[in-house]
Amino acid sequence: MSYDRAITVFSPDGHLIQVEYALEAVKKGTTAVGVKGKEVLVLGVEKKSTAKLQDPRTVRKIVQIDDHICMTFAGLTADSRILINKARFECQSYKYYYEDPIGVEYITRYIAKTQQKYTQSVGVRPFGVSTLIVGYDSKGFPKLYQTDPSGNFSSWKASCIGRSEKPVKEFLEKNYIDEMDEEQTVRLTIQSLVEVVESGEKNIDIAIMRKNKPIEFLGRTRIAEIVKEFEEEKKRKEEED
Amino acid sequence: MDSLVGFVGKNYVLMAGDTNAGRSIMRLKDDFDKLVQIDSHKILAKSGEIGDGNQFCNLIIRNVSLYRIRNETELTTKSVAHYTRRQLATAIRKNPYSVNLLLGGYDKKDQKGSLYYLDYLGSSKKINYGAHGYAALFVGSILDRFWKEDLDFEDGLELMKKCLREVEKRLIIGTRCFLIKMINSDGISVVEKVMINSEKKNEIEEEN
Image (tube, rainbow over all chains, first blue to last red; front, top):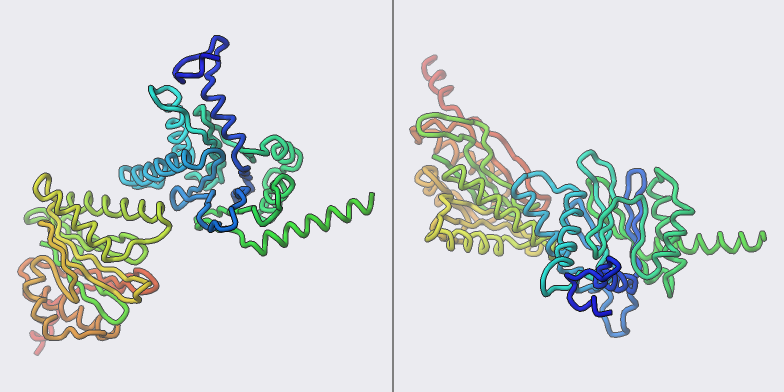
């Protein structure tokens, strides 16, 4: 495969091999899930298990981009830092020029544009990161967007990126219902992660984005409660069968 | 010309600015808010060129916000004062901003308010009380005489009104309307929009 040395080159069958390799890097990253409810957005991430001597609080996967926009990612953490920094700067820059807070689609397009730039520039490699961006648009509707290393972006009702993308997406497709309330959305997010995350609920972070409110991270005890409820339900179902 | 007055009290900072915006002899606006909110607990009171004031304050607000989003914590008043001063100082010999500022802020960590005096040349000084514009000529002596450390809110408001009454009385240009804001642990609040009218006093005298 000599067509993967310089990323500006197409392979004979029309692939950008480096971009596909970047997607592989994303598939190695820890899982991140985003679910859109009727008036709420929930992000869930699988936290990488930290070493014994490591401070777990310094490993943050859900970050604020602006007061009303949050994002998470899957893939190379260091690469994501660059994108997050650029996004944060762009949000303030937009407000500087237009006084209005930036739109969710606008910042998604900006991040996607940046990722695409790095697939068509000399001497650089693509970002090994897919992102999930959540926020409320100007009309007040919740929005969830996903970008990937190729620079594609699209809006989703619920999406998953990273290690367990396939099984979690199947789970979401089976169980997602339109216009869920906050409780249902949170439960769906936790449920979709609990199945695939090794070592259970201690390694899950859940963040809730409500309209015009700052982001809220769900407490450990609440997550543990909800996970317990699932397990009891599961047991009951198995006993019935 | 703009009048800005500010002083530090017991766990609060009181700031006032006149609400006039004008061009030469014309008053363009009489409800102009010169006390701009920088973040939840800081106000930048601006005076001078209106356009420069807008641009500069916008720049400071956006950069303070960027710091907050990046680092998940707010800057202290001292840091914002230093940052603002640096922006003014680097600009003065290239493309100066014609703005004089009073930066007031409350820091939750120290549980204290602080006030900084900044001017367009890049000066910065932490002060207990101060003013910009023509007000400074009249108000300086009043504050020298009556300001005390740890004034409680009622006394502070009385002192502020004393200052503003003097400005209205002695400044030949009719300033009349002032906006007073307070910063304390709860954040920024508008205390009063004061209309000081000494004409009424004359009416009473005539009756006599």
